[in-house]
Image 1 (cartoon, rainbow, N blue to C red):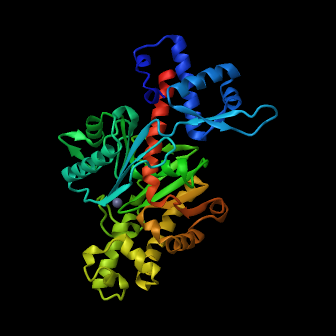
Image 2 (image 1 turned 60 degrees about the horizontal axis):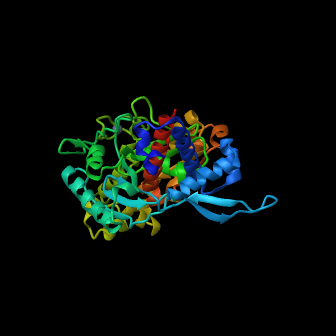
Image 3 (image 1 turned 135 degrees about the vertical axis):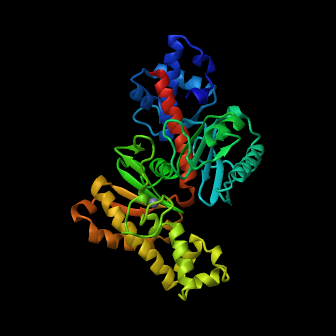
Length: 414
Ligand SMILES: [Zn+2]
């Protein structure tokens, strides 16, 4: 990885031998990053190179501090081969998850482990200046703890809700500071490659690299937060459509002449099954006289109801909360039936805050699916809630940075 090795001389034109050597470095680094470890014979097989050549390349990478010896593997007859792996703390990645109401961030190493505290705090994304200042202040403090030096960092991955132009990374959630886009503002301040992506697709990247979609060719990730988004893994790749707007699952119509949606249409899935909808239904129901422990949990202050409040009530057996989630699940199931018929996915992963309702949400979804799907297609699909829970989008941000840098490097050598 060019960026990983800081082979700047190469960018200014290296000899053919250098180019070839650096391309092989890159292949070895990516293999070790993705597989954890490998021996000389395994790498020789992968690259079709001789064992002495691989040995020379590995020694160069050890010298650069990117690769390290891990000890000896099992014998395959004769001497036990030395195993090599990535030096996990050679480089770091910054990951930021901007959600509708919470922001999280952390610094990760090359084994995708957090090397800083993971900071999570409430913020109102509608106040743009405050959002930037809040993130910069906290990230600066995190980096100061790590004695920040830009050379040690590979890049920044940012997950954000809403429409994002695939090619330019331009966001349409109007997050601008001094006329700079979100991506440019971070690039300028930290002098690092910065990549932004829609939060549902970042969730899919996280599940694909580290979670329930690992090694799956076809999987769908449904992200239910304030809105409802969809990240699609189709034939092993993240699908983003012509302009990068694919996956606006929350805006398909499920209620004829239903409630007004933020998109300007009526009766979208978001108006009946998103976190925002659940909170509004809870508030209306309680005002209308429904008995529920939700009002006790917020001491009568209905503005303080969050999705987490409804889930807490649910776990305490609150019938009103169970009904709310059940209704959301029924609508979701109906819409997911459409997805199953179109995509025939292996796995559907339900994530986001509302997924915290677990089987209270999955059961009504299954009920709806039993009603609305062709059994032969449905039986191929497993539906589960995310195993990575709160961390999935931060890990997805790490995967986004690493995938993009490896891809850029492949294109450079082509
Ligand atoms: Zn809508």
